[in-house]
Image (cartoon, rainbow, N blue to C red; front, side, top):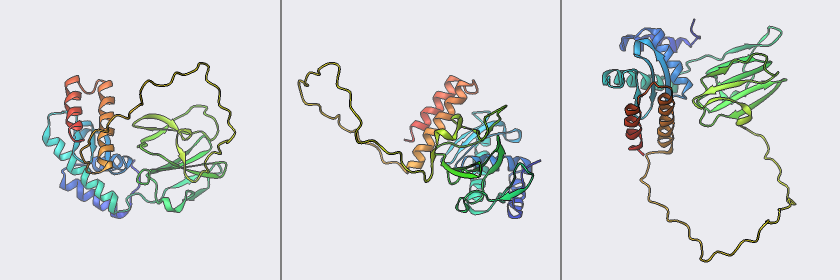
Length: 264
């Protein structure tokens, strides 16, 4: 049973499925994957599109058959259209979550975050994920905190057995993590002591025989945008993960890596 979408999004999914000769379930699965990737990338496993694969806005598309260029073009066209749909349409309605007493409440997170891609509760903590804003809201003990997810593309919540109250682990392209590794939005900076003693050196240091010169900074080619460079780096990291898991051969990994590096 798939998650609810707005009537406008439901109509768009039906239209896209018909034009791309796909089932609505396949289009919806890809829509969720693109949404989890912040609208710029997707990791998916859809039988109608060749099984497992990856897409990144800017030209990087991987499918089960690395040499099926027709399927690559089909996936790229579908993902581009779904990315545009997410950017122009409210796809997922605000989700209601239930507390321990069984009551539900909407929008316990800050209103300026909009609608999350997913939300839920685990270990007496609520969470809501906002990939487009790169934000994660967590509520424990009635206190809501918002975190900057940075480059994490959260794909799910790590199930915990007997976890500590209020603890939630998430999964992204970098693996499993918790909020202790994220920066809290609006938290005051940690005070720094002005009287920190410095340990004396254990051995006297000889003065340098010649002045140290900074190495010249190599010229760099202008980039189309920092987001494109970050996207290419993220794509290479994803390729490395597939290579380590044996999904990509050495030759396939080297070929795609060289192609991506050539765009920097």
